[in-house]
Image 1 (cartoon, rainbow, N blue to C red):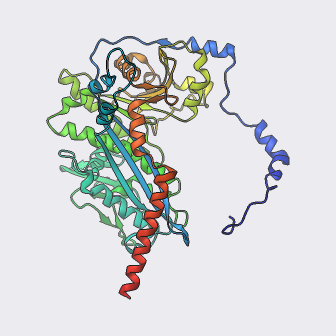
Image 2: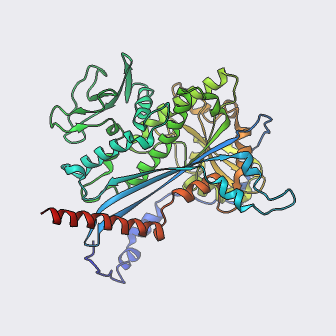
Image 3: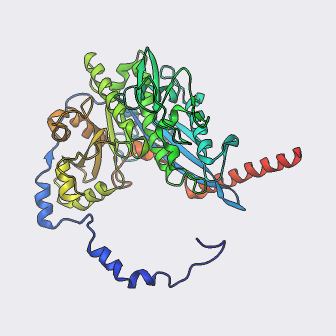
Length: 480
């Protein structure tokens, strides 16, 4: 690492370029390649035409997106930081969106209608201790972060009428996770934390019959029998494991953002399920930024999320309602890059599921005994080439309660099990945009409200953070 204001050597790159190890790395590496015209044509023949669906579309769209940022507390303490995470959600009326044109014969948008359409936006803003910042006199950054995250989950700003706080939703999801992360015992919900986040203690408990800490919803937290620190139910997400005292959250902010986006959707679904308006879910299409998956330490949430969606659609079916729609939008990544490479070969209004065999041929190896996304995904990826020539990488929820059974590897990519694809493609056609590659209008609006730009947004956060901590230092000096 350089000293402050020290500049790099202008020739430091030469050792890499001249080094024969670099060329060996290139020669011995496999990576995504653009298909030849012959292979592209062959690949395109595997895509199938979209079938029309006469069923009515949802009248509302719920879109969400998130962003994150880190600010130093002072110019003299650049290594001491605060982490910011913002998740915005938008509820959009489809009929009002379709009426945005000023008249039938014009292609121009009425700006007043557009502004009115974007008013129903909500945001969850999290402020978290990062590098070298010990919250509430905690012994280290990770312990302070754990407490702060717990406080954010019980904060009244996350409460919904029926679902309660975000922590209550986490308890419900944990108890639906197949016994690995939580249970319901004697009508009491428990979350399981496998070991103490501080000392690694793993006591035997009677609730789960294995080692770890069982935290009841009534108690809210527990104490480690070895080191005495407080253990929170949010520790089950293991987000604190991404933190180091000096490095702070670093890559952990993106994981916190990802978990928050998906948890807020589950929070909304549960609020409808627990209330008297479950039928409303049949009239909503959820657009999710990214694949339908949880990654890293909180990946266990994909199991209860899959169960929640299946339970919701089963309930709607019993009421004679259409299923709830959820669509993941992948803007980046290897599948999105592959889709752009093959777009010129694909027939329009055609699609294909990205099954394991497809990944093995064109993206990355998947062994026969393995199932891609088994520990992370709750939905199936597909590539769709629209009538207008845009290509999308979409995700649709698995239509199964869980991933048990030897046939899941084949059935998860079997079109016959996905009865709502026609409506999915119709929703994409309505909202597809030429503004960015693979973009949809609701996600664009949600991102615009969530994104923290370097200038001026990030700069303002930098200034506000430093002013707040400078004021704190002045107040401490006055007290002395």
